[in-house]
Length: 265
Image 1 (tube, helix red, strand yellow):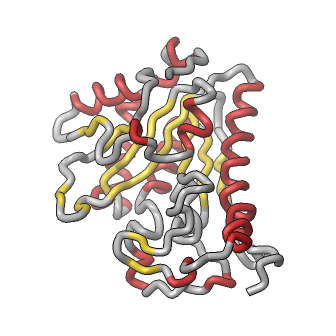
Image 2 (cartoon, rainbow, N blue to C red; image 1 turned 90 degrees about the vertical axis):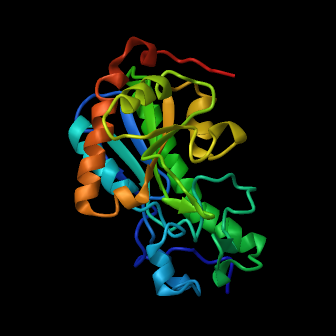
């Protein structure tokens, strides 16, 4: 393979989908694992068809929920189009799992012994444009006098390594409580909703890249959301849980404390 040629062809989809805000709001949604596209030159990456339906390829339902929230609140969305098996846009560039050789037990032959040049092609074509789009969106909001309130939308498997996850929605956060605390309080007060505080992953152990890169250092209020995939793997499920989460999120972005830049160590 010629590592010097462009990674994407004119026939490949663009690396980012952006839904522009329909009104002036501080709320914005980012979706790191929205799609499961693969560049034409990689084919199926040596991964069996059934594996592309699993969470290893994308965050099932996350983009559909994001679109419903955008319609409800009039907020913008920035979403990554390509599969996390090609490159994981929620990982640092030096992370060994950026282009995983094995994902949850499934080998990814196209990623085996990836050269630095090939890795650099993927970064330049997919990772950089996505984060540039996030940076541009947040910067434009700041230029209009808004402090962006950022929701990073993800989904997680109902069972992982034999453990049945009881949480319907997890709220991940590191040190800035402005959005996570009231969001969790509202979710916990809803009938039939089990909310996890830094579950099923813990943002305090360095989990994730996007929130740290764009929000923590910049002092923007934010939260990373994990909705269980078995709840949002159908249209009806996405409708229901987008409504549940939207009810919890309602008016939070307009609270006075959200309108300040605060860096929380």
